[in-house]
Length: 495
Ligand SMILES: Cc1cc2nc3c(=O)[nH]c(=O)nc-3n(C[C@H](O)[C@H](O)[C@H](O)COP(=O)(O)OP(=O)(O)OC[C@H]3O[C@@H](n4cnc5c(N)ncnc54)[C@H](O)[C@@H]3O)c2cc1C
Image 1: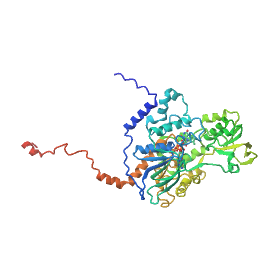
Image 2 (image 1 turned 180 degrees about the vertical axis):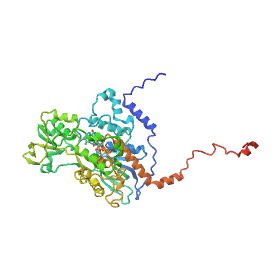
Image 3 (image 1 turned 135 degrees about the vertical axis):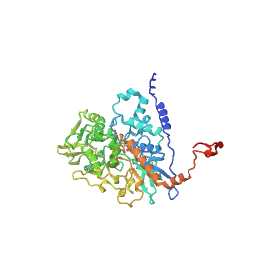
Image 4 (image 1 turned 60 degrees about the horizontal axis):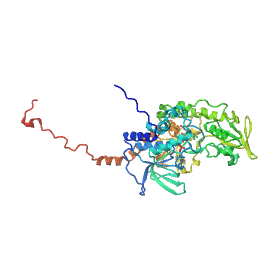
C-alpha cells in the first residue's frame, strides 16, 4: 500500500479560516446554550457574564465560556485593536516569550499564532523568525477576535462595579468614548484588566520632588521623540527598563544612564523554570507556605531582561549601565534634576522610572465599592521573618474560580460574583491569568468554575427542566411485547 503524500500546507489565511471553521463545527461550536435567562428583581435583563478587558485574557475567557455555552460580553475602554499594552505602551521590538507558545488558542491548532503566521508568510519565515514582533502579536489578537466572533464593546470604560444588595448579580456603570453613560447588570463579572489589573504603576516616592513633566513611568503613553538631545536617567533594569532605554536612545537622547540597585543583572528567568504543567494545574492546591515560597523566590531573584532587549541598549555608546546605584535622593536643578546614588550624583533632564506595577486600589476608582471588602493574603497568611513581600501580601485571596472573598463573611454580599482574572491572581492560582504561556489553562479553569457555580445556583430550574423534559428517544412502536412462551402459536416450549 502506498501512503499518499501529505496535503501541502495551505498558504492562505482564507484557507486557514475555513479549516478553523470546520474544526469548530467538528467540535460542535457554537455550544448549545443551557443557561436559564435571568432578570433582576426590577425586571432588568441580566448578562450572564460581563468581562472587563478585551486583551488576551478577556478574549480567552470569552472563548472558554462560549465553549461551555455561556454567553459573555466584553467591555474595553480602548479603541478596537489597541487593547492591552502591545500597540500602546509596550516598547520592545519582539515579544519576550518564545514563539512556540500557543497562548490563547485553547487547544485549537488552527487558532494558534503559528497557524496564523504560516498561513500568511509560510514555514520558512516561521523557521527564520526568532521571536514574535510585538505589533504582529496585536494583529494576531485582532484576527483571533474576528474569527472567534468575540463580543467586545470597545470605547466602553467601566467606571464603577457594585454587587447588587440581594447578591444576585453585579451592576456595572459604563462611560463610552463619547461620554455617554449607561449601566448593565451581569450575574457574574470577570476582571480581565491586565498586569496592573487591580492598581497601577508602582511609583517611587522620590519622584514627588519633580514636576510631572520631568518624569514618566515606563508604562506611560509618551512620545519618546521629546527626549531627543536630553540626558535621560532610567531607574531599574528589568525588561521594560531596557525597552524604555532603547527607545530613548533610538529617539536621539543625548545619553541614557541606567541606575540599577543590584550589583549585577539576574541571569536566569526562574519564572520560566517554574512553568511546568504541575504548577499550572496544581499551584492552587498547594499549601499556603509553598505558594508563598515559590512566588517570593521568583520575586526576589527577579526576571532578567531579554538578551535581545539588553543588546538593543548596550549597542549604543551613550548607554551606561550603573550597578549598585539605588536612588538616595532626587532634587530639581535648573531645567533638570540631580539624582544622588552611593556611586555619585547624576544630572538628568528627564527621568523614567521602570519600577513595575502594584495592587493599588485608590488608583482604580471603578473598584471603590468593593476594595475595602476584598480579602487579601495579608488577612490570611503571615510569612516567616525575612520572607515578607508587599506584592504578595496585597494579592487577593481567591477562590477556585478566581472569585474574590469577603474580608469578613457577610460584609459585602455578592462580592464572590466578581472573578479576578488578572495578574494579581498569581499567588492564589499561579501565572495563569495574563501571561501567554498558560492563559488557555487559566481561561478553562475560570470558565469551568463559573459553569459549576451557575449550575448549582440554578439547580431548581435545571431540576424543573429535567422533570418536564419529555423528548422521546423511543416511541413505543419499535417492538412488540412478547407473549408468554406457552401462548406462542399454541406451541409448547420445552423447559
Ligand atoms: C510591556 C509588556 C510586555 C509584555 N510582554 C510579554 C511577553 O512577551 N510574554 C508574556 O507572556 N507576557 C508579556 N507581558 C505580560 C502579559 O502578557 C501582558 O500584560 C498582557 O497584556 C496581559 O493580557 P491581559 O489580557 O491580562 O491584559 P491587557 O492586555 O493589559 O488587557 C487589559 C484590558 O483591560 C482594559 N481595561 C482595564 N480596566 C478597564 C476598565 N475599567 N474599563 C474598561 N476596560 C478596562 C484595558 O483597556 C485593556 O485593554 C507583557 C506585559 C507588558 C506590560
